[in-house]
Image 1 (cartoon, rainbow, N blue to C red):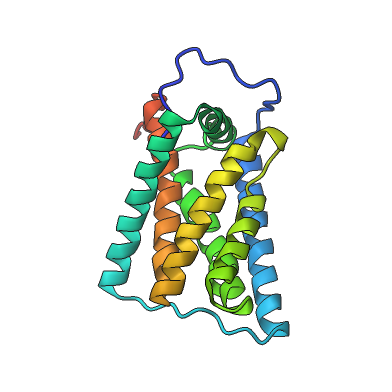
Image 2: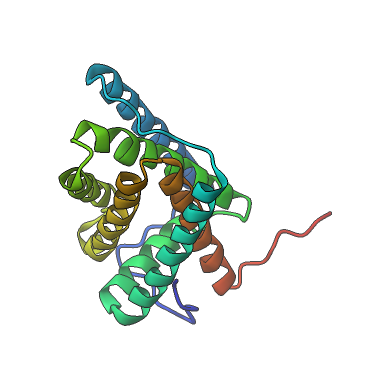
Length: 203
């Protein structure tokens, strides 16, 4: 995850967003993705990838999230372009949020993106390795917030491939959902913790 940014200059294209703007953007994006998923599912008569609530599936999702977080930390350390891209993205999205908002950071994208990209798109495209590749590419494009953010898009494509392969192999959408939610939560939690964000004081 991002290193402690001591006096790190912000990228010139950085424009500060408010907490409300971030939350509204997450909510609107989640709704749009869910609508696209449901319309695609209805018009294409696409069956949703099964969601099976079992303890092994939850544990596998947790383990997958921890693995993705570990790989991200390694890539962040070894690839300067990704480090700059990830730091900019996290600064833009995470900084305005308060600690309880991290729940929404995990749930909203985690549920909506998995339902579309893995739950509907994989079956619609054939539920095969090619479907994983195509859905992962589109998943990466969704995370491209600007021309300078291409390293983050590459990383999103890799993560999409990991989540898509897991869904394809296990046939259980719950696993990538759990992994995605926890990965998002961890990235936000660790960024805030490493940047010295204080916990809210109780009255």
